[in-house]
Image (cartoon, rainbow, N blue to C red; front, side):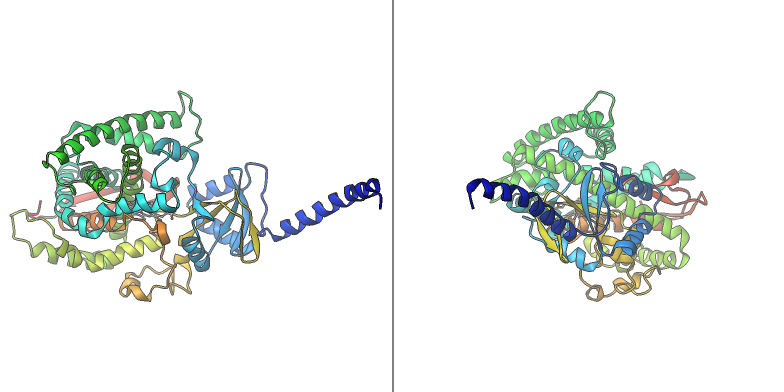
Length: 479
Ligand code: HEM
Protein backbone atom coordinates (compact mmCIF):
# COMPACT_ATOMS: atom_id res chain seq x y z
CA UNK A 1 0.00 0.00 0.00
CA UNK A 2 1.39 3.37 -0.96
CA UNK A 3 1.85 5.96 1.81
CA UNK A 4 -0.88 8.10 0.18
CA UNK A 5 -3.39 5.22 0.24
CA UNK A 6 -2.40 4.38 3.80
CA UNK A 7 -3.04 7.99 4.84
CA UNK A 8 -6.48 7.98 3.15
CA UNK A 9 -7.40 4.69 4.84
CA UNK A 10 -6.14 6.00 8.18
CA UNK A 11 -8.21 9.20 7.86
CA UNK A 12 -11.31 7.15 7.00
CA UNK A 13 -10.88 4.67 9.84
CA UNK A 14 -9.90 7.19 12.54
CA UNK A 15 -13.32 8.86 13.01
CA UNK A 16 -14.95 5.40 13.09
CA UNK A 17 -12.51 4.30 15.77
CA UNK A 18 -13.15 7.44 17.82
CA UNK A 19 -16.93 6.91 17.59
CA UNK A 20 -16.64 3.27 18.70
CA UNK A 21 -14.27 4.17 21.53
CA UNK A 22 -16.38 7.02 22.91
CA UNK A 23 -19.56 4.96 22.62
CA UNK A 24 -17.83 2.18 24.53
CA UNK A 25 -16.74 4.61 27.28
CA UNK A 26 -20.15 6.29 27.30
CA UNK A 27 -21.78 2.91 27.67
CA UNK A 28 -19.63 2.31 30.68
CA UNK A 29 -20.78 5.51 32.38
CA UNK A 30 -23.40 4.99 35.09
CA UNK A 31 -27.09 5.35 34.16
CA UNK A 32 -28.85 8.70 34.51
CA UNK A 33 -28.85 11.93 32.52
CA UNK A 34 -26.90 15.16 32.81
CA UNK A 35 -30.02 17.23 32.10
CA UNK A 36 -29.68 20.80 30.83
CA UNK A 37 -26.14 22.20 30.38
CA UNK A 38 -24.73 23.68 33.63
CA UNK A 39 -28.08 23.56 35.45
CA UNK A 40 -28.55 19.80 35.21
CA UNK A 41 -30.44 18.57 38.28
CA UNK A 42 -29.16 21.41 40.54
CA UNK A 43 -32.47 23.25 40.85
CA UNK A 44 -34.54 20.20 41.70
CA UNK A 45 -31.93 19.04 44.24
CA UNK A 46 -31.73 22.48 45.91
CA UNK A 47 -35.52 22.62 45.99
CA UNK A 48 -35.60 19.18 47.66
CA UNK A 49 -33.10 20.36 50.29
CA UNK A 50 -35.07 23.53 51.00
CA UNK A 51 -38.36 21.67 51.34
CA UNK A 52 -36.79 18.88 53.39
CA UNK A 53 -37.71 16.31 50.76
CA UNK A 54 -34.12 15.44 49.79
CA UNK A 55 -34.45 11.89 51.09
CA UNK A 56 -37.50 11.34 48.91
CA UNK A 57 -35.68 12.96 45.97
CA UNK A 58 -32.74 10.58 46.40
CA UNK A 59 -34.93 7.53 46.94
CA UNK A 60 -36.74 8.30 43.68
CA UNK A 61 -33.40 8.48 41.83
CA UNK A 62 -32.27 5.21 43.36
CA UNK A 63 -35.58 3.59 42.39
CA UNK A 64 -35.18 4.86 38.82
CA UNK A 65 -31.45 4.29 38.19
CA UNK A 66 -30.18 2.07 41.02
CA UNK A 67 -27.51 2.71 43.68
CA UNK A 68 -25.02 4.15 41.16
CA UNK A 69 -26.08 6.93 38.80
CA UNK A 70 -24.83 10.06 37.13
CA UNK A 71 -26.22 13.59 37.19
CA UNK A 72 -25.07 17.18 36.83
CA UNK A 73 -24.84 19.49 39.84
CA UNK A 74 -23.86 23.12 39.22
CA UNK A 75 -22.15 22.24 35.98
CA UNK A 76 -20.06 19.40 37.44
CA UNK A 77 -20.67 15.83 36.25
CA UNK A 78 -21.53 13.96 39.42
CA UNK A 79 -21.55 10.32 40.45
CA UNK A 80 -24.30 9.65 42.96
CA UNK A 81 -23.69 6.69 45.25
CA UNK A 82 -26.07 5.11 47.69
CA UNK A 83 -25.94 2.35 50.27
CA UNK A 84 -23.68 0.67 52.79
CA UNK A 85 -21.26 -0.62 50.12
CA UNK A 86 -20.97 2.90 48.72
CA UNK A 87 -20.22 4.31 52.19
CA UNK A 88 -17.52 1.68 52.64
CA UNK A 89 -16.07 2.43 49.21
CA UNK A 90 -15.86 6.20 49.78
CA UNK A 91 -14.55 5.95 53.35
CA UNK A 92 -11.85 3.40 52.53
CA UNK A 93 -10.93 4.60 49.04
CA UNK A 94 -7.34 5.63 48.30
CA UNK A 95 -7.05 9.40 48.79
CA UNK A 96 -5.15 9.52 45.49
CA UNK A 97 -8.44 8.65 43.75
CA UNK A 98 -10.96 10.64 45.81
CA UNK A 99 -10.10 13.90 47.59
CA UNK A 100 -12.11 16.40 49.60
CA UNK A 101 -14.35 18.50 47.37
CA UNK A 102 -15.49 21.80 48.78
CA UNK A 103 -17.02 24.79 47.00
CA UNK A 104 -14.40 27.32 45.81
CA UNK A 105 -15.91 29.81 48.26
CA UNK A 106 -14.74 27.70 51.25
CA UNK A 107 -11.14 27.64 50.02
CA UNK A 108 -11.12 31.39 49.42
CA UNK A 109 -12.74 32.22 52.75
CA UNK A 110 -11.15 29.63 55.04
CA UNK A 111 -7.75 29.46 53.39
CA UNK A 112 -5.87 27.01 51.14
CA UNK A 113 -4.45 25.00 54.05
CA UNK A 114 -7.69 24.24 55.87
CA UNK A 115 -8.06 20.52 56.57
CA UNK A 116 -10.93 20.06 54.12
CA UNK A 117 -8.66 21.05 51.22
CA UNK A 118 -5.77 18.78 52.16
CA UNK A 119 -5.01 15.20 51.15
CA UNK A 120 -2.43 12.53 51.95
CA UNK A 121 0.41 13.43 54.33
CA UNK A 122 -0.67 17.09 54.53
CA UNK A 123 -4.13 16.00 55.68
CA UNK A 124 -2.74 13.45 58.15
CA UNK A 125 -0.40 16.05 59.65
CA UNK A 126 -3.06 18.74 60.21
CA UNK A 127 -5.60 16.18 61.41
CA UNK A 128 -3.08 14.74 63.88
CA UNK A 129 -2.41 18.25 65.20
CA UNK A 130 -6.13 18.96 65.66
CA UNK A 131 -6.66 15.62 67.37
CA UNK A 132 -3.89 16.35 69.83
CA UNK A 133 -6.41 18.84 71.27
CA UNK A 134 -9.72 17.17 70.35
CA UNK A 135 -8.90 13.72 71.77
CA UNK A 136 -10.89 12.58 74.83
CA UNK A 137 -7.85 12.54 77.15
CA UNK A 138 -7.40 16.29 76.60
CA UNK A 139 -11.06 17.24 76.31
CA UNK A 140 -11.95 15.60 79.62
CA UNK A 141 -10.13 18.47 81.36
CA UNK A 142 -12.65 20.90 79.90
CA UNK A 143 -15.90 19.45 81.19
CA UNK A 144 -15.89 21.97 84.06
CA UNK A 145 -15.15 24.87 81.70
CA UNK A 146 -18.00 23.85 79.39
CA UNK A 147 -20.26 23.50 82.44
CA UNK A 148 -19.48 27.10 83.47
CA UNK A 149 -20.20 28.40 79.97
CA UNK A 150 -23.56 26.59 79.94
CA UNK A 151 -24.61 27.95 83.34
CA UNK A 152 -23.66 31.51 82.37
CA UNK A 153 -25.63 31.15 79.16
CA UNK A 154 -28.72 29.81 80.98
CA UNK A 155 -28.62 32.73 83.43
CA UNK A 156 -28.28 35.28 80.67
CA UNK A 157 -30.59 33.90 77.99
CA UNK A 158 -33.10 31.49 79.58
CA UNK A 159 -33.87 32.47 83.18
CA UNK A 160 -36.51 35.18 83.38
CA UNK A 161 -37.72 34.49 79.83
CA UNK A 162 -41.11 33.04 78.95
CA UNK A 163 -40.44 32.38 75.31
CA UNK A 164 -37.16 31.75 73.47
CA UNK A 165 -35.97 30.61 70.07
CA UNK A 166 -34.02 27.44 70.76
CA UNK A 167 -31.96 27.26 67.60
CA UNK A 168 -30.29 30.70 67.62
CA UNK A 169 -29.68 30.34 71.35
CA UNK A 170 -27.99 26.98 70.90
CA UNK A 171 -25.80 28.52 68.20
CA UNK A 172 -24.84 31.33 70.58
CA UNK A 173 -24.04 28.79 73.28
CA UNK A 174 -21.95 26.41 71.15
CA UNK A 175 -20.12 29.46 69.74
CA UNK A 176 -19.33 30.64 73.29
CA UNK A 177 -18.04 27.21 74.29
CA UNK A 178 -15.86 26.97 71.20
CA UNK A 179 -14.59 30.50 71.51
CA UNK A 180 -13.41 29.67 75.01
CA UNK A 181 -11.88 26.29 74.15
CA UNK A 182 -10.44 27.03 70.73
CA UNK A 183 -9.29 30.60 71.15
CA UNK A 184 -9.21 31.05 74.93
CA UNK A 185 -11.50 34.08 74.52
CA UNK A 186 -13.77 34.22 77.53
CA UNK A 187 -17.15 35.75 78.34
CA UNK A 188 -16.90 39.54 78.77
CA UNK A 189 -13.91 39.84 76.40
CA UNK A 190 -15.00 42.28 73.67
CA UNK A 191 -13.21 40.19 71.08
CA UNK A 192 -15.82 37.46 71.58
CA UNK A 193 -18.69 39.79 70.57
CA UNK A 194 -16.72 40.87 67.51
CA UNK A 195 -15.97 37.25 66.59
CA UNK A 196 -19.66 36.21 66.83
CA UNK A 197 -20.61 38.83 64.23
CA UNK A 198 -17.64 38.13 61.99
CA UNK A 199 -18.16 34.37 61.99
CA UNK A 200 -21.83 34.87 61.16
CA UNK A 201 -20.79 36.92 58.12
CA UNK A 202 -18.25 34.26 57.16
CA UNK A 203 -20.86 31.48 57.38
CA UNK A 204 -23.42 33.53 55.42
CA UNK A 205 -21.07 33.66 52.44
CA UNK A 206 -19.61 30.21 52.57
CA UNK A 207 -22.02 28.44 50.22
CA UNK A 208 -22.40 31.29 47.74
CA UNK A 209 -21.18 31.81 44.18
CA UNK A 210 -17.66 33.24 44.66
CA UNK A 211 -18.20 36.62 42.96
CA UNK A 212 -16.06 39.17 44.74
CA UNK A 213 -18.02 42.38 44.15
CA UNK A 214 -18.75 44.92 46.90
CA UNK A 215 -22.44 43.99 47.26
CA UNK A 216 -22.14 40.18 47.32
CA UNK A 217 -22.42 37.91 50.38
CA UNK A 218 -19.16 36.31 49.27
CA UNK A 219 -17.40 39.68 49.44
CA UNK A 220 -18.73 40.40 52.95
CA UNK A 221 -17.64 36.94 54.01
CA UNK A 222 -14.12 37.52 52.62
CA UNK A 223 -13.87 40.86 54.44
CA UNK A 224 -15.00 39.22 57.69
CA UNK A 225 -12.47 36.42 57.19
CA UNK A 226 -9.67 39.01 56.80
CA UNK A 227 -10.64 40.61 60.12
CA UNK A 228 -10.85 37.23 61.90
CA UNK A 229 -7.43 36.34 60.49
CA UNK A 230 -5.92 39.54 61.87
CA UNK A 231 -7.45 38.83 65.29
CA UNK A 232 -6.19 35.25 65.28
CA UNK A 233 -2.70 36.39 64.27
CA UNK A 234 -2.64 38.67 67.31
CA UNK A 235 -3.83 35.77 69.47
CA UNK A 236 -1.04 33.57 68.11
CA UNK A 237 1.55 36.21 69.08
CA UNK A 238 -0.03 36.67 72.52
CA UNK A 239 -0.24 32.95 73.22
CA UNK A 240 3.22 32.24 71.78
CA UNK A 241 4.71 34.79 74.21
CA UNK A 242 2.75 33.35 77.15
CA UNK A 243 3.95 29.84 76.33
CA UNK A 244 7.57 31.02 76.12
CA UNK A 245 7.30 32.67 79.52
CA UNK A 246 5.60 29.52 80.88
CA UNK A 247 2.65 31.65 81.98
CA UNK A 248 0.20 29.54 79.92
CA UNK A 249 -0.35 25.82 79.68
CA UNK A 250 0.04 24.10 76.29
CA UNK A 251 -3.45 22.62 76.60
CA UNK A 252 -5.09 25.92 77.54
CA UNK A 253 -6.92 26.12 74.21
CA UNK A 254 -6.58 24.83 70.64
CA UNK A 255 -4.27 27.65 69.52
CA UNK A 256 -1.88 27.18 72.46
CA UNK A 257 -1.94 23.45 71.80
CA UNK A 258 -1.09 23.86 68.10
CA UNK A 259 1.70 26.32 68.97
CA UNK A 260 3.17 24.05 71.63
CA UNK A 261 3.38 20.94 69.44
CA UNK A 262 5.63 22.87 67.07
CA UNK A 263 8.53 21.76 69.21
CA UNK A 264 7.56 18.15 68.65
CA UNK A 265 7.11 16.34 65.34
CA UNK A 266 4.25 18.43 63.92
CA UNK A 267 4.96 21.90 62.60
CA UNK A 268 2.00 24.02 61.55
CA UNK A 269 2.70 27.50 60.20
CA UNK A 270 0.79 30.50 61.57
CA UNK A 271 -1.33 30.48 58.41
CA UNK A 272 -2.16 26.80 58.86
CA UNK A 273 -3.16 27.37 62.48
CA UNK A 274 -5.44 30.23 61.40
CA UNK A 275 -7.03 28.35 58.47
CA UNK A 276 -7.78 25.37 60.68
CA UNK A 277 -8.97 27.29 63.73
CA UNK A 278 -11.51 28.96 61.40
CA UNK A 279 -12.63 25.70 59.80
CA UNK A 280 -12.97 23.92 63.16
CA UNK A 281 -15.17 26.74 64.45
CA UNK A 282 -17.34 26.58 61.32
CA UNK A 283 -17.51 22.76 61.24
CA UNK A 284 -18.21 22.50 64.95
CA UNK A 285 -20.59 25.09 66.26
CA UNK A 286 -23.57 24.85 63.90
CA UNK A 287 -23.63 21.04 63.72
CA UNK A 288 -23.70 20.59 67.51
CA UNK A 289 -26.27 23.38 67.90
CA UNK A 290 -28.50 21.59 65.39
CA UNK A 291 -28.24 18.27 67.24
CA UNK A 292 -29.19 19.96 70.53
CA UNK A 293 -32.10 21.81 68.89
CA UNK A 294 -33.46 18.51 67.55
CA UNK A 295 -33.05 17.15 71.08
CA UNK A 296 -35.08 20.04 72.52
CA UNK A 297 -37.83 19.42 69.95
CA UNK A 298 -37.89 15.70 70.67
CA UNK A 299 -38.15 16.18 74.43
CA UNK A 300 -41.18 18.44 73.89
CA UNK A 301 -42.84 15.85 71.63
CA UNK A 302 -42.00 12.51 73.24
CA UNK A 303 -43.07 12.15 76.91
CA UNK A 304 -41.53 8.69 77.29
CA UNK A 305 -38.06 9.76 76.09
CA UNK A 306 -38.42 12.91 78.20
CA UNK A 307 -39.14 10.85 81.34
CA UNK A 308 -36.06 8.64 80.77
CA UNK A 309 -33.76 11.60 80.23
CA UNK A 310 -35.08 13.58 83.20
CA UNK A 311 -34.66 10.59 85.47
CA UNK A 312 -31.06 10.03 84.37
CA UNK A 313 -30.13 13.69 84.67
CA UNK A 314 -31.96 14.32 87.98
CA UNK A 315 -30.05 11.43 89.55
CA UNK A 316 -26.76 13.02 88.54
CA UNK A 317 -27.95 16.44 89.79
CA UNK A 318 -28.92 14.88 93.15
CA UNK A 319 -25.47 13.36 93.54
CA UNK A 320 -24.00 16.89 93.60
CA UNK A 321 -23.63 18.75 96.89
CA UNK A 322 -26.67 21.01 97.02
CA UNK A 323 -26.11 24.77 96.67
CA UNK A 324 -22.33 24.50 96.17
CA UNK A 325 -22.44 24.95 92.39
CA UNK A 326 -20.41 21.76 92.00
CA UNK A 327 -19.46 21.32 88.35
CA UNK A 328 -20.17 18.26 86.21
CA UNK A 329 -17.24 15.93 85.76
CA UNK A 330 -16.03 13.46 83.16
CA UNK A 331 -17.32 10.66 85.42
CA UNK A 332 -20.81 12.26 85.44
CA UNK A 333 -20.83 12.26 81.64
CA UNK A 334 -20.01 8.55 81.64
CA UNK A 335 -23.27 8.00 83.53
CA UNK A 336 -25.35 9.80 80.88
CA UNK A 337 -25.69 6.69 78.74
CA UNK A 338 -29.40 7.02 77.93
CA UNK A 339 -28.99 10.67 77.02
CA UNK A 340 -26.22 9.91 74.54
CA UNK A 341 -28.17 6.99 73.03
CA UNK A 342 -31.07 9.37 72.40
CA UNK A 343 -28.61 11.83 70.80
CA UNK A 344 -27.31 9.03 68.54
CA UNK A 345 -30.86 8.10 67.53
CA UNK A 346 -31.53 11.77 66.73
CA UNK A 347 -28.36 11.80 64.61
CA UNK A 348 -29.60 8.65 62.87
CA UNK A 349 -33.09 9.95 62.11
CA UNK A 350 -32.20 13.61 61.44
CA UNK A 351 -28.47 13.86 60.66
CA UNK A 352 -27.23 17.48 60.50
CA UNK A 353 -25.04 16.66 57.47
CA UNK A 354 -27.14 15.11 54.75
CA UNK A 355 -24.66 14.56 51.95
CA UNK A 356 -20.98 15.05 51.25
CA UNK A 357 -18.78 15.47 48.21
CA UNK A 358 -15.40 14.25 46.97
CA UNK A 359 -13.60 15.08 43.74
CA UNK A 360 -12.29 12.38 41.41
CA UNK A 361 -8.52 12.75 40.96
CA UNK A 362 -8.04 9.69 38.71
CA UNK A 363 -10.34 7.61 36.48
CA UNK A 364 -11.62 4.64 38.43
CA UNK A 365 -14.01 1.74 37.97
CA UNK A 366 -16.94 1.20 40.31
CA UNK A 367 -19.49 -1.59 39.91
CA UNK A 368 -18.43 -2.00 36.27
CA UNK A 369 -18.79 1.72 35.44
CA UNK A 370 -15.94 4.03 34.51
CA UNK A 371 -15.88 7.22 36.56
CA UNK A 372 -13.74 9.84 34.82
CA UNK A 373 -11.24 12.16 36.49
CA UNK A 374 -12.70 15.63 37.08
CA UNK A 375 -16.14 14.38 38.15
CA UNK A 376 -17.36 14.75 41.69
CA UNK A 377 -18.81 12.02 43.89
CA UNK A 378 -21.84 12.81 45.99
CA UNK A 379 -23.12 10.33 48.50
CA UNK A 380 -25.89 10.76 51.01
CA UNK A 381 -24.16 8.58 53.55
CA UNK A 382 -26.95 8.73 56.05
CA UNK A 383 -29.53 7.23 53.65
CA UNK A 384 -28.33 3.95 55.18
CA UNK A 385 -29.79 5.21 58.47
CA UNK A 386 -33.24 4.58 57.06
CA UNK A 387 -32.51 1.14 55.61
CA UNK A 388 -34.68 -1.50 57.32
CA UNK A 389 -32.07 -4.16 56.59
CA UNK A 390 -29.50 -2.26 58.64
CA UNK A 391 -31.79 -0.66 61.23
CA UNK A 392 -34.88 -2.86 61.67
CA UNK A 393 -38.10 -0.83 61.64
CA UNK A 394 -35.95 2.14 60.65
CA UNK A 395 -38.73 4.74 60.87
CA UNK A 396 -39.25 3.97 64.55
CA UNK A 397 -37.40 6.23 67.01
CA UNK A 398 -35.65 3.68 69.20
CA UNK A 399 -32.53 4.70 71.17
CA UNK A 400 -32.05 1.13 72.42
CA UNK A 401 -30.51 0.35 69.02
CA UNK A 402 -27.34 1.92 70.37
CA UNK A 403 -27.20 -0.15 73.56
CA UNK A 404 -24.68 -2.43 71.91
CA UNK A 405 -22.45 -0.44 69.57
CA UNK A 406 -21.07 -3.67 68.09
CA UNK A 407 -24.56 -4.62 66.87
CA UNK A 408 -24.65 -1.59 64.53
CA UNK A 409 -23.41 -2.85 61.13
CA UNK A 410 -20.21 -1.19 59.83
CA UNK A 411 -20.56 1.83 57.50
CA UNK A 412 -24.27 2.11 58.30
CA UNK A 413 -24.34 4.73 61.10
CA UNK A 414 -22.35 7.54 59.54
CA UNK A 415 -23.62 10.80 61.06
CA UNK A 416 -19.97 11.59 61.90
CA UNK A 417 -18.68 10.25 58.58
CA UNK A 418 -16.12 7.46 58.38
CA UNK A 419 -12.56 6.55 57.42
CA UNK A 420 -9.64 9.00 57.53
CA UNK A 421 -12.00 11.98 57.47
CA UNK A 422 -14.30 10.86 60.30
CA UNK A 423 -15.36 13.89 62.31
CA UNK A 424 -12.52 14.67 64.75
CA UNK A 425 -14.98 16.74 66.81
CA UNK A 426 -17.37 13.89 67.74
CA UNK A 427 -16.13 13.72 71.34
CA UNK A 428 -16.37 17.49 71.64
CA UNK A 429 -19.94 17.32 70.33
CA UNK A 430 -20.78 14.55 72.82
CA UNK A 431 -19.46 16.51 75.80
CA UNK A 432 -21.27 19.75 74.94
CA UNK A 433 -24.54 17.97 74.12
CA UNK A 434 -24.57 16.07 77.42
CA UNK A 435 -23.71 19.10 79.54
CA UNK A 436 -26.30 21.31 77.81
CA UNK A 437 -29.09 18.72 78.00
CA UNK A 438 -28.26 18.19 81.70
CA UNK A 439 -28.85 21.86 82.54
CA UNK A 440 -31.86 22.20 80.27
CA UNK A 441 -33.83 19.30 81.74
CA UNK A 442 -32.82 19.88 85.35
CA UNK A 443 -33.57 23.62 85.26
CA UNK A 444 -36.50 24.00 82.83
CA UNK A 445 -39.61 22.51 81.33
CA UNK A 446 -40.76 23.68 77.92
CA UNK A 447 -43.32 23.25 75.19
CA UNK A 448 -43.31 24.12 71.52
CA UNK A 449 -45.04 27.37 70.57
CA UNK A 450 -45.90 26.69 66.92
CA UNK A 451 -47.72 23.79 65.35
CA UNK A 452 -45.25 23.88 62.44
CA UNK A 453 -41.85 22.90 63.82
CA UNK A 454 -40.46 21.58 60.58
CA UNK A 455 -37.09 22.50 59.12
CA UNK A 456 -35.49 23.01 55.74
CA UNK A 457 -31.89 22.37 54.70
CA UNK A 458 -29.68 25.29 53.66
CA UNK A 459 -27.64 23.00 53.41
CA UNK A 460 -27.72 22.45 57.21
CA UNK A 461 -31.14 22.18 58.91
CA UNK A 462 -32.84 25.51 59.66
CA UNK A 463 -35.97 25.56 61.80
CA UNK A 464 -38.96 27.67 60.99
CA UNK A 465 -39.08 30.52 63.57
CA UNK A 466 -35.86 29.16 65.11
CA UNK A 467 -37.93 26.56 67.03
CA UNK A 468 -39.82 28.83 69.41
CA UNK A 469 -40.53 27.35 72.82
CA UNK A 470 -42.29 28.48 75.99
CA UNK A 471 -40.03 27.89 78.97
CA UNK A 472 -40.69 27.57 82.69
CA UNK A 473 -37.95 27.30 85.30
CA UNK A 474 -38.05 24.26 87.58
CA UNK A 475 -37.59 25.05 91.23
CA UNK A 476 -34.02 24.01 91.66
CA UNK A 477 -30.93 25.44 93.23
CA UNK A 478 -28.47 24.39 90.52
CA UNK A 479 -26.68 27.17 88.71
C1 HEM B 1 -23.23 16.80 66.05
C2 HEM B 1 -22.15 17.41 65.68
C3 HEM B 1 -21.32 17.06 64.46
C4 HEM B 1 -21.64 16.33 63.35
C5 HEM B 1 -22.94 15.62 63.04
C6 HEM B 1 -20.46 16.32 62.49
C7 HEM B 1 -20.38 15.64 61.28
C8 HEM B 1 -19.23 15.57 60.52
C9 HEM B 1 -19.10 14.75 59.31
C10 HEM B 1 -20.19 13.88 58.70
C11 HEM B 1 -17.84 14.93 58.84
C12 HEM B 1 -17.20 14.24 57.64
C13 HEM B 1 -17.55 14.93 56.35
C14 HEM B 1 -16.97 14.20 55.12
O1 HEM B 1 -16.62 13.01 55.19
O2 HEM B 1 -16.89 14.85 54.09
C15 HEM B 1 -17.17 15.88 59.73
C16 HEM B 1 -15.89 16.35 59.55
C17 HEM B 1 -15.31 17.29 60.36
N1 HEM B 1 -15.80 17.79 61.55
FE1 HEM B 1 -17.59 17.34 62.38
N2 HEM B 1 -19.49 17.08 63.09
C18 HEM B 1 -19.96 17.53 64.30
C19 HEM B 1 -19.27 18.29 65.23
C20 HEM B 1 -17.99 18.76 65.08
C21 HEM B 1 -17.26 19.51 66.08
C22 HEM B 1 -17.81 19.88 67.46
C23 HEM B 1 -16.05 19.81 65.53
C24 HEM B 1 -14.90 20.58 66.13
C25 HEM B 1 -14.69 20.77 67.40
C26 HEM B 1 -16.01 19.24 64.19
C27 HEM B 1 -14.96 19.33 63.31
C28 HEM B 1 -14.88 18.66 62.09
C29 HEM B 1 -13.73 18.75 61.19
C30 HEM B 1 -12.48 19.62 61.40
C31 HEM B 1 -13.99 17.89 60.11
C32 HEM B 1 -13.09 17.61 58.90
C33 HEM B 1 -12.26 16.36 59.16
C34 HEM B 1 -11.34 15.96 58.04
O3 HEM B 1 -11.52 16.39 56.89
O4 HEM B 1 -10.41 15.18 58.33
N3 HEM B 1 -17.21 18.60 63.96
N4 HEM B 1 -18.05 16.24 60.74
